[in-house]
Image (spheres, one colour):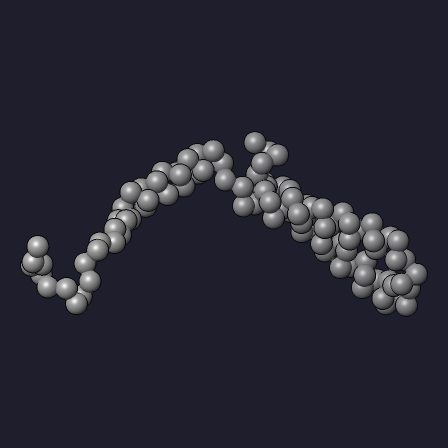
Length: 99
């Protein structure tokens, strides 16, 4: 299940990665060497991007129990929706047509 959910430890790790990237950018900018370290920043950004992707996917993952609950609610909603059946009556016609 750990592969399918995003636990507290992994969330803290992602926050640490984001803060480390921000700090490194500030540090390099402060020394005027930001663009000289483009390859390092590209690697760091790639690591953060990958972990952000996992967070986005895993944080919204439905466990089997939640998925089953969603299915039950969805099925119940479908049963409650009345299907409109058109008829052949037109407003201009009389209520008792003559045959």
